[in-house]
Amino acid sequence: MTHGPIDDDGSGTRRYDEGPGRRPYDDASARRPRRADTSDRRPYAEDGTASRPGGEDGRAPRPDAEGAAVRRPIGEPVRPVRSHPVEPTWTRPPDPDQVDPAVLGTLLRRHGWQRRGGATGRYGRWTPPGPAGRGMSLLVPENRAFPDSDDLLGEALTALSRSGSPAARDVLVALTVPSDEIHWWRDVPTGPLGTASWGVEDQLRSAARQMLLAAALATRARAGYYGARHRLPAAACLDGVLVGAAPGGRRLTAFVPVAGGRPLALRLHQALYAAREAIDYQRATGGMEAFDGAVEAGVSHELTEALVALVRGTEGARVAVDWAPAAGVPEGGTAPAEPVEFSPGDLPVLREAGARYLREEPSIPVRITGVVVRMRRSAGRGEGTVRLRVLAGAEVPHVRMTLDEESYRIAGQAHLVGLPVRVRGRLESRGGFRRLTDADGIAPVQVDEAERDRLMKSLQETAEITAFFEEACGGD
Image (cartoon, rainbow, N blue to C red; front, side, top):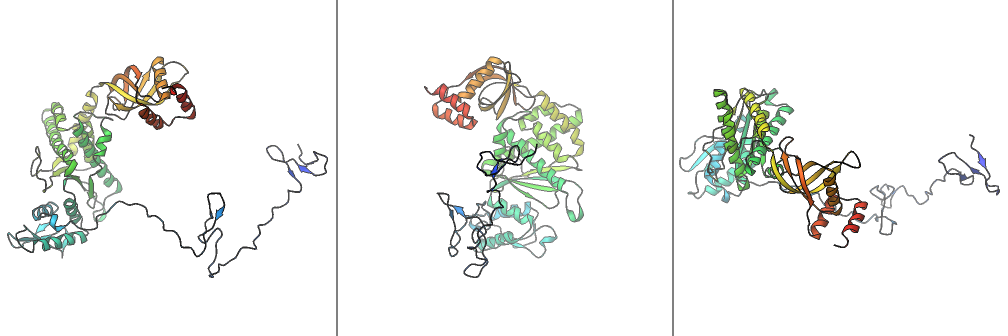
C-alpha cells in the first residue's frame, strides 16, 4: 500500500498518512524544528568563569512547588550536604584508670608478648612477638602500689594504639571490650611470604562462623539437629562478636563480650571437649553411643558440619577458648583451657555423626498460630499449598503445609480479612523443620482491630483484597 498526501476535508490543506500506528500531521507542521533561541545564552558568567547550562553546577534547575524551574543565584553559597552516618570508631586507647595492670599483663602474655626483665614486683618490660617487634618495648606496672603506675600504664596503652602489630590490636580490643577469646588455627600450606589464598581465608572465616552459630543454637535448646529452629535469635547473638584475623589465613580470633556472650563461649568450650571425647570413643570401640550423650553438652549436626568445614583441606586444626581475665573462669569452664585438636582422620567419624543426628531427630507435634503469606494450587478446586509466617507455637520463621479444599478455603478467607489462623500438625525434621504434615483443625484467630490492621499492612494486599476487607469487616 502506498501512503501519500490526502485531502480529507476539502480545505486544500494536505495531510500525510504515515501508515499504521502513526499520526497524520499537517503539511504546515511538517517543517524541520526550529533551533532554540540562544540570544540569552552567555558563554561566560559576569565574574569571568565559564557558565554551564542549567546552573553553575551543570545540573538541571529544580522545580518549585508549582512546577516552575528555579535557578540558584550565582552568588548564593551552596547549601551544606548532610554527611552519611558512619559507625563510631575507636581512635583512643582505654583510660589508664580503668585498666587493671594484672589484666594487661595476662593479655600481653596470651597474645605472644615476651617479658624481657624489669624490676621484680614493680614493673615488667614486654616486647611484641616476631621480628616486627624489634626496637619496641613496654614498661607495664604489676600493680598500682607505686606513684608512677598510672603514667606507665598510659604510656604503654599509647604505644599499643600506635603500633600496627596484630598482637597489639588484639590486646587493645580485649581491654576495651572485656571478652572471652575463641581462637582457631588451621595447618595449611602458605603462599609466598606467608600469604594465603582467598579460598583458604574464606574457608576459615566460614567455618568459624558456623561453629559460633552452632554454639548459639545450643544456648537456646539442646537438639541433635536444629534445622530452621532458633536460627534468628541465634544469629542475633553473633552481632556483638568482634573478629580479628592474623596474616596468612591460618589463625582467627573472635572476641565474645562477657556481657551477654559468655554463655555462648562456655557452651562452645564444653561442646568441643565432648565432641573430642566422642570421636576418641568411636575410634577406639567403633560405637557411636558417645555422641548421644554429647548432645547435652552442645554437640549437634550443625557443630559436626562446622568441624568438617574447619578440618577439611588441612593437616589439622585446633580451637581454644581463653576466658576474659577481668571476669575470671566461669562455672563449668577449665583454666587454662587447652586447645582442642582435630585431624583429617576425624572427618569420617564427624560425617557419620552428623548424618546420624540428621536421621534420628524426631518430628514434633505442634499447634501453630501464623499469618497466611502465600497460597497456591494447580486448579480452581481441590487441595493446595499454604505458607504461614509463624507467630507462635514453633521456633521457625515460616512453615509450608498442604490443605484439603475446605481448609484451603478457610485459610484464604482468613488471609482476605487479615486474620491469623491456628492449625495442628507435625513439624517434620526432614527439610529442616520447615514443613507441617497432617495439618488439621485450621481456624481463624480473632484479634483486636489494631493488630488486624498491622497484619493487613504486612501482607501488602492488593486493591481488590482491600475492597473485600471493607465489605466483609466494615460492620465489625
